[in-house]
Length: 292
Image 1 (cartoon, rainbow, N blue to C red):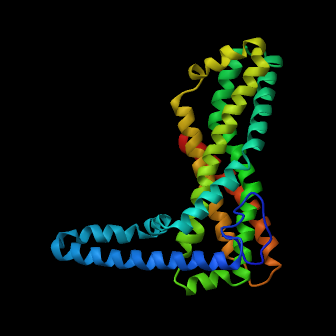
Image 2 (image 1 turned 45 degrees about the horizontal axis):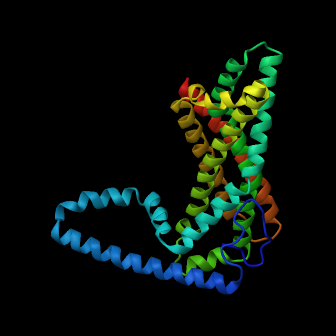
Image 3 (image 1 turned 30 degrees about the vertical axis):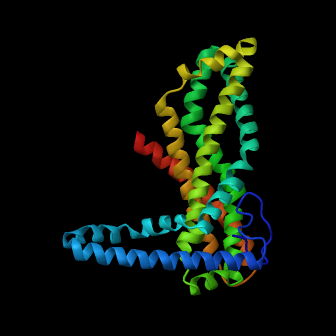
C-alpha cells in the first residue's frame, strides 16, 4: 500500500496502489471481504455450537490464539496478498544482486585468509567456510542488509500514513490493521530474509571455491553436498527467520508509534535502523547462549 502524499522509498513496499482511487478500491474490497468472512464465521460457530456442544473448548483455544491467527486469516483476501507479494519482491528480489556480490566476495576473502595466512588446505578452508557461512555469517549479514534497506523504508511509510491520518481512516472503516498493514510486511520481510541468507551462503561457497580451487572449481562445486549438512542449512534458515521477524516487527512498531508531526518521519526511519541492528545482535547472542 502506498501512502498518499508519501515519498517513494526503495527497499520497502513501494506501493499497493498508484493513486487515491486504487487505494479506496482496495480498502472497500478488503472491508467487504472482512465483513463477508465475519458473517460466515458467525454462522459456522452457531451451527457447530448447536450440533456439537462439546466443541466449546476448541472455541476457547481459538480465542486464546486469535491474536496470531486473525492477522494470518487476512491473507485470504486479495489486497493483503498483494501487499505480501510486493513486500517480498521489493525486499528480497531487489536486494538479491547485492547479496550475491557480497557473498561471493566474502567467500573469496575467507578462503584466501585461511589458505594463505593460516596454512589451511583448500578443502578444509571450504568446509570451515560452509560451517561459518551457513550458521553465523550469512544470516547476520543478510539481516543487516535487510535492516539498512527495508526497515527504514517500512518505518517511514507507516509513519507517513500515521501523520497523514490514513491509519485512522482504515481503523474507522473497520479494516484490521494487523491483517492489512502489519502481517503482510512482517511475513514478507521474514521470507525475504530467509531467501537472502541462503543466497549469500551459496554465493560465499562459490566465491571460495573459485578462488581456492582455480581450475578444479567444477569438482569443488560438485562436492558441495559433502561439505554441507542438513543441520547447517536449517540453522541458517531458522536464524534468518528469527532476525527477519524481529526487525520487521520493530520497524512496524516504530512506524506506527510516531507523533502527529512531519518531522517525526525521518526520526522513525533512523530509529528503526538503530533498533533493528541492536535486535539482530541481541538475538544472535541469545541464540548462542541457548545452543551452548
